[in-house]
Amino acid sequence: MRFSQSKSMGLFIWLSLLCGLPQISIAQDYQRPGGGDVFFLGQKLNGSVRTISDFRNITSLGFGIGGCLGHIGFCMGVFLGTAQDGKYEFSCNGGHFLFDYYFLKTRLTPLVTGGVGAYKISRPGSVWATDYRGLFNFGIGARWDLADPLFLKIVYNLSFMTSGDTASEFSGSGFFFNLGFRFIKKS
Image 1 (cartoon, one colour):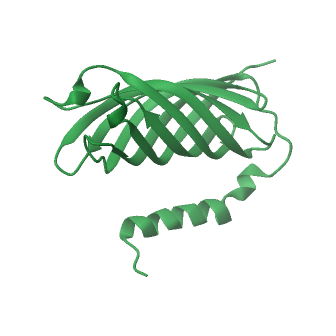
Image 2 (cartoon, rainbow, N blue to C red; image 1 turned 90 degrees about the vertical axis):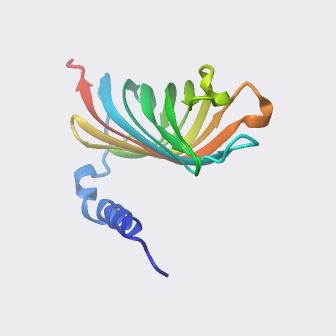
């Protein structure tokens, strides 16, 4: 089996996180204090649009705000990026509102997430260039409160985007991450 350089680097990073850094998040009961989050987000999706185009790669970056109340978290983010289909490059922008459920009260906890939003993928002369469309997200992943006030959230995400034409709906899957700062409410 032959690995590309990017796959090798990704494997190295994941192994480092799994083997070298767990002492930062010792599995003790951890109460996420009330307050707000500010974060940077990144997203990489692969998917397809039926009958219109075949998107091989959607990459976007953005920022957001959120918060956490015990096992429930919420966030709102905006993103800008590009989508490619082999022939053309499209601009991609939008935003989403997500709810998270954290299963454990530890610094490292699995989570499920879901939410709604809006997006726009456009290219001059494209049928996608008209207006914003609906976006539905579902995902599973983990949140790691590295050290107060820093956190990292990585999620494998499924996205379903409507186009107004049932013959051209987009679905995609991939990873998104949030790297952020938590504003802790003092009691």
